[in-house]
Amino acid sequence: MASVARDLQGKKCLECGSEHLFRDYERGELICNDCGIVLEDSLIDQGPEWRSFDSEQDERRARTGSPMTFLSHDKGLATEISWSNKDYYGKRIPHKNRAQIYRVRKWHQRIRVSNAAERNLSLALQMLNDNGGKLGIPKDIKETAALVYRRAVEKNLIRGRSIESIVCASLYAACRMVNLPRTLDEISKASEVNKKKIGKAYRHLAKELSLNLKPTTPYSYVAQFCNKLDLDKQAIVISEEIVRKSIESGISSGKGPTGVAAASIYIASVLVGKPRTQKEVARVSGVTEVTIRNRYKEISKALDIPGLE
Image 1 (cartoon, helix red, strand yellow):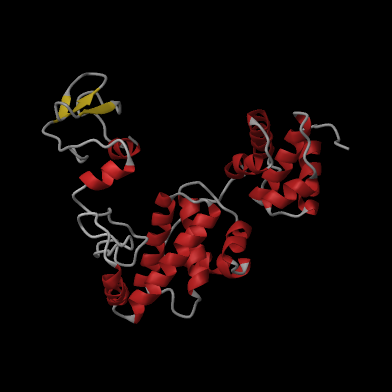
Image 2 (cartoon, one colour; image 1 turned 180 degrees about the vertical axis):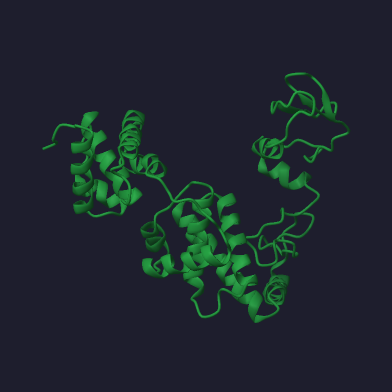
């Protein structure tokens, strides 16, 4: 359903200008919900013509391989030899033939990577996938990061820089693109790459690839930090309200978004009766306790919030 919504995004009815369109797959038509006009007909249903109720049925009935993915150096289009030690009919391979099949698999893996450029790309994408998994980043965002990295390779931006820093910078950029930001500290801890190197590589990518990403706002971090602190929806709502008032009053200008978000959460946790210490908030937000104290004092003074002792 999400892919259908993205497909219809930006389309309008030619008759009334409405954006409320829906696809009727039984008739193969694209219809306007407001005036009822048929905008397109004879649509092709891209889904399978069969149904499956578990992963085994899905694998047995599928007649094609895995979909194309940017997370593999060959985009997932190469042939894969299964490691399950079963033949095409599902029968187990005899022990006397397993050593031969093992050698075939090894040579197949070596042949898939034909030169140094492909080997480096394969290594980088594997690293990207691993770091994304540690950070809990969804697959579609990792695909975006892989696309950013491939663009960097095409423009020869990797030369003179470590693969690790460019991979981390690509992940950071992809998260910013979809408004699911991860802090540089989080990416640095997951990848064990210096934070300054990641920041420098990200600025280089943003400039050379013309990414034009908007600055992150404190709103982007509130829900994430509250979940890590085990705070409920009420604390999130109050934190976002404090952030909104801080932005409107101008006290957040020139301040780091993570610091403002952390201070707002610290205040909200006390107001809802589930106080968290500055040390706990600092640990999940990646900012120092001194920063939280400074932001807290500025916000409480500007918004007339009574002192928290």
